[in-house]
Amino acid sequence: MKRILVTGGAGFIGSHLCERLLKEGNEVISLDNYFTGEKRNIVHLMKNPFFEVIRHDVTMPYFIEVDQIYNLACPASPIHYQYNPIKTVKTSVMGAINMLGLAKRIKATILQASTSEVYGDPKVHPQPESYWGNVNPIGSRACYDEGKRCAETLFINYHTQNNVKIKIVRIFNTYGPRMHPNDGRVVSNFIVQALKNKEITIFGDGKQTRSFQYIDDLIEGLVKAMNSKVELTGPINLGNPREFTILELAKKILKLTGSNSKLTFHPLPDDDPVQRKPDISLAIKELKWKPNIALEQGLIKTIEYFKKRVSI
Ligand code: NAD
Ligand code: UDP
Image (cartoon, rainbow, N blue to C red; front, side, top):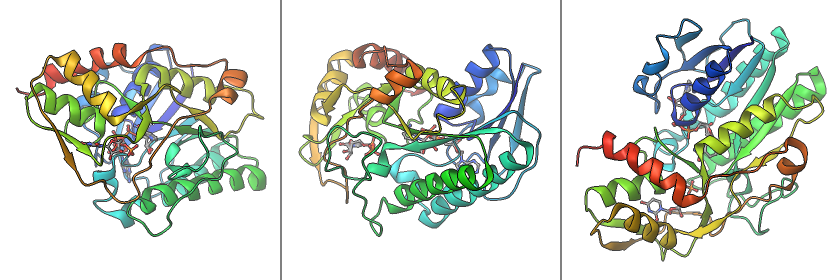
């Protein structure tokens, strides 16, 4: 049994991770300030005596004795991370400094939830970990992208300078139950709109692409990355390489929900990446990991969740 801290533990990914780590027989502590996360995501875990819940902001130091730290705290959807961009930078950068300082002091292994956004609007396709990216440092996504890039820098430097055991994973678009219905991300938006027979809001012409990974595949990858050999620090991509246009996604969701919603077209947000698809050769080779859940299969489970969650 390990004692494991999950920052952002009440969020979409964090709550699934806490659940998985508890199932494996670990003692798990969720640390969250509930900016975008919700207690309802973890309430079912609270009866487990090996689960603890802490309300705390990662921009402030926190001291605890654990074996492993998963650092997930950070708003992840564009509308939420752009709501208070300075706070988003602080969360990524000061959160990383505080959690790395803790890991150094207690000799814990620490994993950083980085993102495909470090590749920005990529000029290399698909994106391997060796690609340095194409990020606008003063654009509307910069608070998130540059915050996450700086966090990666901090992780590498704590590792080389202070021997902290680190893992950096770059997560590509992930979806599934417990996404917030109003968080503005494309999968949750389209499903909620389709279930309510409201207009489906396509930004731009819908020809931009994303590669969607189901939450269970990601959780498996996160746990494998954390427990991989010490030398494997990453960065390492975790994503589903099957690429879809946003229009294709909308049509799939309409079909699976049997909705009458009409497609409507709206301006593309600034710096919205044109294409995104992970090169996962490194994860396949080093972690023996690859995603197994096809988009349609994952969407069916996600639609079931939103049917119960959203009053239609
Ligand atoms: P989420 O918004 O559901 O979860 C983030 C959690 O962090 C929330 O519970 C929120 O309350 C908490 N949080 C935010 N700021 C905090 C702070 N200052 N102190 C303490 N807690 C704070 O988003 P998610 O999709 O679960 O993302 C989790 C992590 O994975 C994030 O770091 C995100 O950048 C990364 N990621 C997610 C995706 C994706 O597709 N979901 C893709 C790439 C990277
Ligand atoms: N998008 C869209 N309609 C929506 C929400 C998003 O067309 O209602 C588009 C968005 O412009 C982007 C893609 O879907 O091109 C993925 O958006 P999301 O916010 O989910 O993730 P990210 O852009 O961070 O990859």
